[in-house]
Structure formats: structure tokens, C-alpha cells
Image (cartoon, rainbow, N blue to C red; front, side, top):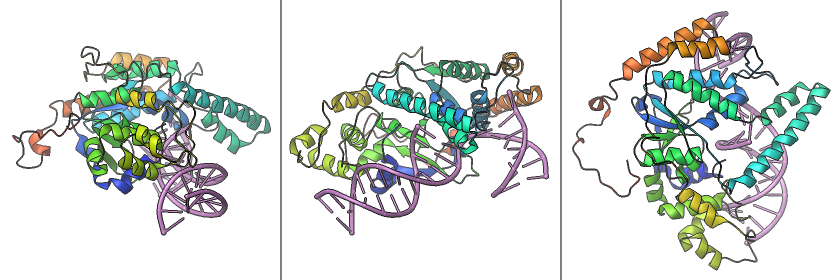
Amino acid sequence: MGIKGLTKLLADNAPKAMKEQKFESYFGRKIAIDASMSIYQFLIVVGRSGTEMLTNEAGEVTSHLQGMFTRTIRLLEAGIKPVYVFDGQPPDLKKQELAKRYSKRADATEDLQQAMEAGNKEDIEKFSKRTVKVTKQHNEDCKRLLRLMGVPVIEAPSEAEAQCAALCKSRKVYAVASEDMDSLTFGAPRFLRHLMDPSSRKVPVMEFEVSKVLEELNLTMDQFIDLCILSGCDYCDSIRGIGGQTALKLIRQHGSIEHILQNINKERYSIPDDWPYQEARRLFQEPLVCTDDEQLEMKWSAPDDEGLITFLVNENGFNSDRVTKAIEKIKAAKNKSSQGRLESFFKPVGNTSMPIKRKAYWLP
DNA sequence: ACTCTGACTCAAGACGTT
DNA sequence: TTGAGTCAGAGT
DNA sequence: AACGTCC
């Protein structure tokens, strides 16, 4: 997933577009998060040892619930208002990519089988992580959990990342938090990396602003999208021998993929057959997203105590005391941040009534 | 010298106790 | 799986 | 900081 080498490309060519932020500085902010990505991480790592994971009495996996529960509480305690966005139908162009992943998983499943027969623990550990897939059930479990916690859930018609970006463009959220750089390609005005990293692992939150990226790279949004496609994205191949640096050079020189294709040495570089870069571009420019205000309504409400206990304790074997304490944490957090952001507290001095200078629609 | 590729490595959540 | 990091090798 | 536990 994502855009190959984009972090480094931006670090080298647009350092001012990224700034370090403190986790605490997002108090009171609404933040959109790609749920499937989080669930995937939880399934890989939470409570795993070999093929063993956290499970309920029926033997169903609960690692994703454990992860989602504790992380969401962490966010709420920091005064952050998370909204989780779930994937819908993937676009057709992504099907090949998904097919690749599917076959890799199948391979890993065979490898795992062999490792288990051979009793090779390290291999079991390694291969079992590669067989992880987020299922419909995992998604539904997490939606149910989040709703019981009083945290809004949005179901995207297609790509969750694209929907997150759209929410941010229409100012329904302050920023998109993701580890996936294509949030920027989808035009998320403000994009946060490493938001969930604990402060113990000294990785600061990195905040990117698309407008600054474009300004510093001196590209239009459309050109930036072309740059991302050339660097390597999920939707189509890139041109062998052209990486980020060369792509940036070529885009600056020729302005678009079309003009690059007209001007580069085709002996030197072989262009993929039937290269669907235009469709890929379209998916980034105008992805299928929901813009209906009613479906995008977001409410952070009080947790449903009974519902949570039924779901987590009765149905999934969570420890009753822990869940009760956690519910208290949620309530305390909601009280603390219910007044929202105290603007006077957080804003830099002397700026409030300045008219917003709009360079482009995606500025905050 | 620069850039890209491919092969390799590593870690990955969050919490409480020690 | 992903990204990030590092290495070597090869092409310009 | 390292380690075991969470289910």
C-alpha cells in the first residue's frame, strides 16, 4: 500500500511541509482513521504467539477488539475525537494488486503448513503473520464495538483513505491519521503519521500539509498525483528505472505523464503495455466517496455500559473488572473534553480575526 | 557521482508489574 | 503484510 | 527497559 519512497522523497525535497507535533496538541480535534488498516495491524501483533491469538470461548479471534478498544480509549483520553472509516468496494484497478496479495497469502499458508509439520517455531511465527486477512466479521465486530463506545463509524463506498481525505477537505475533520502515504495523494489537507506511536518509542507525530507539499515541490495537485503514480502506487505499475527522484525531475520538466511519454527515450525506458495511468490518476483525483451530510454525521456520545459488558465480557470473555474500569475511563475522558477545544488556550497569540488567506480549496 | 533495483534486515499494540 | 533501513550491484 | 498478559 501507499506510494513507494514518498516519505523520503518529501524529506529530501519538501522538508518544510512536514513538522513534528506533540500528541497532546490534538486535544479536541476530530481525526479520521482508516479502520481496516488498524485492524490489520492488531491482527498481526496483538496477543500473537505463533498461530495463537487472543480468542473467546468459541475460539474466535478477539485481538482486533482488544487492540481497537485500548487504542480508542487512549485517543479519547488525549481529548481526540476519532472517527473510524471502513472500506467499501475496492476499485477495479486495485483488483490485480489484491489478487497478488491473495496469492501471496496462499503461498504463505502453504509455507505455514509445512513449518507446522516440521515444528519450526520461527517459521511458524513468520509465516502466520503473512496469512492475516481482515474479514467482514472483523470489520463488523469493530463497528459494533465502536458504536457501543459512542465513537462514530463511517462506511466508505470504496477506499477508506479516499473517504478520510474527503472528510478533511470538507472540514468535517481536522486531519487524517494514517501510516499510509497515499492519504496525501488523495489530497488530505492535513495528514498525520505516527499518531498512535507511544511516546516511549520516541517517534514524534509528523504532520504534513498538502498545500505546503505542493508549494515546496512547486507542483500542482494534478502534477503531484502524477509524481505519485510514477513513483509507484497500488493502482498500476510504474516505469522501470524511474524512481522518485527521476519522476520529480521529469514532472518538473514536462508537466504531466502525457508530456513525459512524448519526450522520453522509449529505447531507454520501456512503458508498460496498456498502462492505465489515466485511470489511476482519476481514482486519486475523483475517488468514489460519500458526500451526503446525513450519512457523514458524526456524534461522539456516551458509552453504552450494558452493551459493552454484554459484548466484551459475556460474548468475548473480556475481564469484567477491566472493562468496567475502561468504561469509566471513557466517561472521564468525554467529560474532560466535552467542552471541546479551548481555543484561547491553544491558539498562538493575536491571530483570531485574521481573514483566512485561501491559496487553494484544501487549505485549512 | 547519482539513482534505481533487489535482497536483506527489523519491528509491528497497549498495559501493568518488576 | 507494511515501512524503514542498509547493502551491493548495475546502469546512466 | 524488559517482560508477560490481555482473551
